[in-house]
Image 1 (tube, helix red, strand yellow):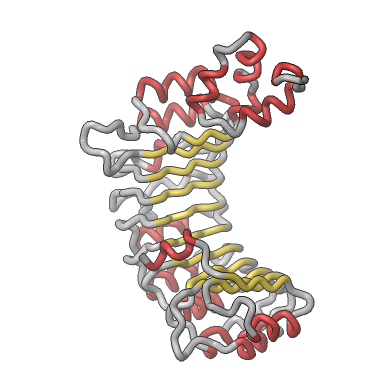
Image 2 (cartoon, one colour; image 1 turned 60 degrees about the vertical axis):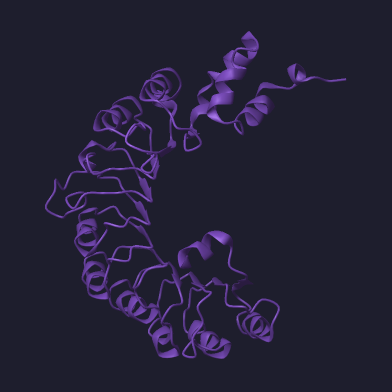
Length: 326
């Protein structure tokens, strides 16, 4: 009977990649062969540290011993709600990431206090930055800051960042490489602020507005005015009406449209009205409706028959989408 030691290295590496970081280090002590595999660069391209409350000493060891130039994406927790004695992210650690990890392209920070971590300390190689339930200072994303910060940034996700407001959104306009913007639960952003900022970000190709206080009609109006080349739109249907959806008619580059429930009002467009608007979008290939209660109903059949050239997805809202309404 074959054992683990009989498996080729490529298979073992694939298995090890599913292990948490702590377990990867532990199995390196099993034998010389496994130690060699744990040291393989491929295994440390993507690292998730959100499972641990990690002392700074351990984090520095991982950075020097295992990650370094191998690292492409990193997920970290900041322990914002763990008490004053919990380890916090520091500017020194962020700068070290930039110096020691020249191939780092994606950084996801969870529940982190970034008020004392300037954005200038983040690695300049980042193409994707995700902030989930993080605290930022008023000065963090202001437009007046150094325009050379994060010159390669293409995607930014702001998920439940309570301090994020119109001034921060305006500050994003300095990231000229930005093509994808996700706003989730950013309740301080106003329709006026969104409209003013999108006017200077006409190059965006993907915009998601989820669980905010913005009305869907107001959001779509700003998109139709300023983002004529947008390819993907994803938003919650709060305040969506048939006239509001109609402003997207004729959008020349729109390829994917996703509308998320579960809030449905009398003004919500009917399946026929959604079909009518979608038929005017020449490049639309994906229509996704989540949490509207239409799955398996006549509404789904109307849309599938009317849009044979599109992938029509009608399904219940997944739990993570439901969280926007909690």
